[in-house]
Length: 528
Image (cartoon, rainbow, N blue to C red; front, side):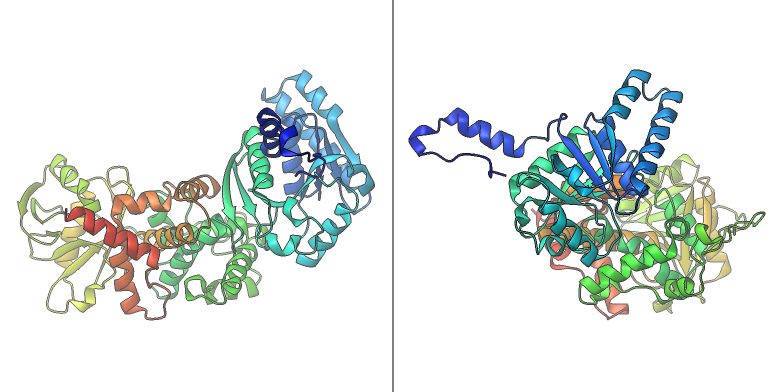
């Protein structure tokens, strides 16, 4: 901000002075400056700990009497545990405790250089808070919200100086997770966003820049990870345990969507999905799940209630994913054409002692009995009523995947399915057979993630690099959606979505213009 800069005639301002002013406006907030945190719940305490360990004096305030003092005691105990674990030395702990203060009155935040709010997700409450803070702090104080679902622009809408307002969306637990989304509202000054970015970067975090859009980066782009799993379940394609196993063991995701939403809380996850859907004016790409709504209505909220998709009662057994019984591997196969992202399978088959014959074709494996084994492409096996078709799902890394997922039509013979099962079991993989669902599980999920990511980039929400970084660090994806789409092929992603759109003509799967552009550009490069 430039409120305290005296403006003189151009002849009086040297280049070095101008540079110094600009640097002061965009450099990280000095470690000697106060950082205030309003709200002393888990997130507020976590953010305070990050700023405190980074070297700032920190003041904690909560409207509930005594809460700030309780938070200071809790933070002191956390620092003690860090010392016990050897992650913080005793001298640093003493210095940090000396910089930590419980504010009983908002007036004690007057000299803060940065105030971060982490209170209830209620727009009117946040607006009132910042209106009150603006009367207390200096005009050069940066005001920030940690909201995960509300509009940064709307929160700042009534402020006298909305340009000094920015979103700093930390992820829980804030001391451990590196990602921070730095969200610029419609009125946010660019130098304020840069100063906030450099500040959290100096705290050891990995910031990404983001425009003020529903869900920002992570909560916007991540919706298909949950939504597609729920759709497969609702269509009777597979049970939750099998879907989770497919995305973990085949897709490389750290957790499956059903176990993850049980951990997050079904009510929390469903509320975010509904908020993004409503903010995008009921765009079908973000449509919430009726099955999840019923789960929330029944009170099965996940781990915190003792039951969600799975039971967490003492002694409860976790359902096992469907795993096919052992089958005999075929001695030879024919690979017709290029298998695209599944091409690494050819070498794995050969290493397993299976004879592979290369022949011309449009990219599939021909089994000895005559059935075609192909990578999920958005079509269904039952459409090929005069052929036996078995589909296999996309994997992040076929060599490292411990499970392969297959689907086929009812008219496919047991012998043909057994050949496909045995083929992958020969590679040491567990095999799950699911219903004949278009796009299967991993392939349709990755395609939708890539589509929303590309759309966000082309709409100026964030750069491609920041989107991929956010998804890797914010939700632990094994690869950024655009990075993965590049490996799969943007044209293949586009085509898979077009096939899904043909079978579900609601608009949900219609590829965005961003995905279409990337697909056609890729084809143009390949034809040169």
